[in-house]
Image 1 (cartoon, helix red, strand yellow):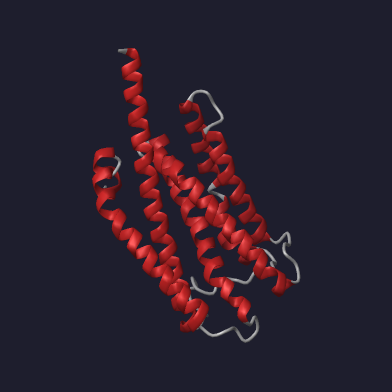
Image 2: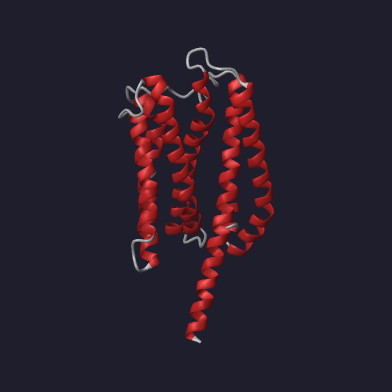
Length: 241
């Protein structure tokens, strides 16, 4: 499997050195194009007016909040089950990025909800489950550093990430399972997107840009963690010598 190949730190470093510039350029290009098309070119909504433009940040941030947690849970599974040396590093590196996307999703959702619903926040099934996701990210990061033995912290955090993954499908299907103020899916639908192309294109560009941004930052953070662990190992060797 390709994932097993990149579990080797040296192989991962070679791959990331090549991929990082491409991901970075793609992130800048997609986000710039998405912002121009979304904020300048695309029309205002006939019901929501100009406030619909919050969508171009809010919706991709929501997508990323779920995707990054999935990556974090996958890294935790690979670390616990298959003992991949990079599994925990990937999960650890992804957590603060995912927490950031989730916070952006919550804040922009509140800004969007005020003119649409007349309230900054309601205890809606979708909103509440996303708030739980944000706390799961924070809990994971807290557990990583909660023990004197780093190994115990890594295992406890990995278990939380895996158990907490049950919240991801709850978020995804909450608007279908419960009576909720939040609108149903308008892009990922079996019948096809219900949003006009003039809005769909910038939305997808922003989604792609956020994805490339996540990939670039994740590679940077994992590379930094590998370097930090090598430095700690060299210091231990020097102290023992």
